[in-house]
Length: 280
Ligand SMILES: C[S@@+](CC[C@H](N)C(=O)[O-])C[C@H]1O[C@@H](n2cnc3c(N)ncnc32)[C@H](O)[C@@H]1O
Image (cartoon, rainbow, N blue to C red; front, side, top):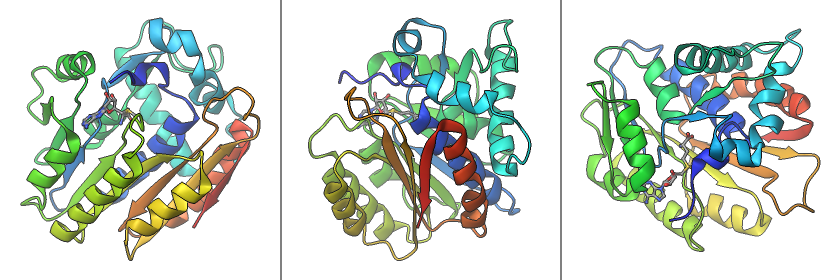
């Protein structure tokens, strides 16, 4: 396990995933019923963008820093809400330099568990899994003493099998693997199909890299999901560096009006980052 999300925190892929995650949470939590959230591949929880890992790649420059520095005129509400969530985390946990026009972006960036935690209401339940010992320890420290978050150092795919369906009968399952393994798409599709058999009404959000279009098409087909929405974000420059420049998020059973919010947000995000987006 070599992957550390700290190298990639706040990059364009996080922008797509986290803007959508914030909107999913907002819509799912607008109903007056308890929600269960499972983050199968949670990472460290929060990241120092000026620190050793993120500082080495500077990937956040082309992601959250660029989005935060974009003019606010005409900014869709979903983008503004995502930026507000990032700024709130940065204000609370970051160093004295704050996100804003002068700095261009946050110093500390929230991972998916922090965005989930910030949105939850009392009585909602959240399980976050992380397998890497160092990141699992960081995640445990991030939520030490917080009884609303159950951190498990465990294989998220196994936990998914064990905890579905949740007693709440309403749930969001975020699956965000590192794609280090050659068979990750197959493993992921198997896990989702299994999850859907146990919890057909659950909302599943699945992040994936786009390097091989045929592999992505095969994966999306293998999900066998009747209510599937896919979003992609592709940066304009790239290819030569070998760095990832395109990714997608598949959402199964999206909440009502999620598609409308993202149809407005995605082109704006893509313009701000100098890329292209699609929604199907
Ligand atoms: C892309 S990162 C997660 C980022 C996080 N979801 C976010 O948005 O902030 C993937 C994480 O999965 C962890 N991981 C890898 N295999 C795992 C597994 N089988 N179960 C749980 N975590 C795993 C990696 O250590 C890494 O921290």
